[in-house]
Length: 479
Ligand code: C2O
Ligand code: CU
Ligand code: CU
Image (cartoon, rainbow, N blue to C red):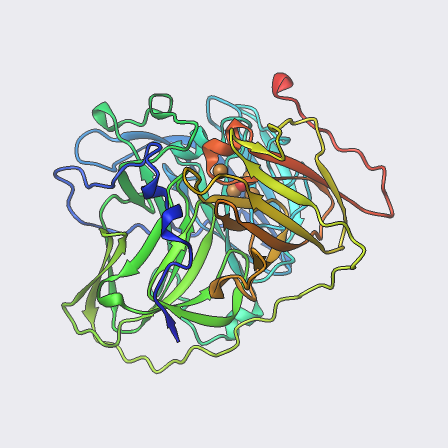
């Protein structure tokens, strides 16, 4: 079976609601450029199972458009960053270095690390000119997670400047799967963003600010405005990351080329799903395999969002490929929920609130026991006429999507670990949430302007063996 719709109701798409929506366009004079594949970040040192890295937030200048370069921020790179590749089981030591003119944090979105120090959200500032050391062990399966700035309340502004990079986890299961996995050759991360360029090609976040979320009018894919990729007739794996502050990406190929989805946010899918369209919300990752074997040298296959052309795939060579994607890719651990457990109800409300409240750094909104699964019912209380999809994200944990308004979740969110899920107006999505690390973690809407404006809350994960453990919670005033 091939699914041919986006699953979500089109009335809820961002383009249908005004609220600052901008059509995409390619500025005049921009020629097609090869897609940048972020280089792999080299470790400082490696000893047996331990590996050391340095991640530096730095200022830079980057050529997005003809003419003046754009002033940017990035991780060990002018914009975005290099890709960190970790292996399950590794113990990772990271020096986080801040060479920016203001404080920042380094949040491991999708990584299961303890909070609030290690996971790098609002409570772990690194001040300008300073550095901080963290370490953690990788316990999770293969996936593309990501690192982005998360200072409260300027996450959106810092991500807009460029502070986001891929963090790939690999494992033995991935190594044995017959899927494309040569990074930069038949496996490409595709970081989907949009930006607004002002005079002299500069960003101006303040001028563009909109509490409903900022739409850019220019696509920027891995930092490239109009990218093409040279591929062969073999299968290609694309790992999409919804990296825009606000925009949803409604992807499909020319000729309705089938995408076989093999992975989601934090794992492979249990079973692959064939589809011609996929919606990617802010914060989400979706991995697909496309098969170019019906094309020939010289053909061009385009990737679109709505009817706007985003990426050109240029078939430059015939190569045979007999590989078959297996029917089973991964076995998620599906913990049993104690029927007596509470079912927390989280609402995403108008005026950028969660459960009727704006975020406060000093307030713990919920508690949950370590290694104890709970159902969470997450409701988007927006009305259907003016409401929008809100991408709900939890730090430090993965979850399983159990149901949408009591019905089965969408085919591509079954049997997969997620950390971000789109919730439609008047919809309740039931999640099965499980934490393997203690700490204080944020949960929030991943439209980053919503998060910064207060659509965020905190949960403390309690170890029954150490129930009174205290965490240092920062305050916005003391930052
Ligand atoms: Cu990408 Cu608080 O997260
Ligand atoms: Cu996160
Ligand atoms: Cu939102």
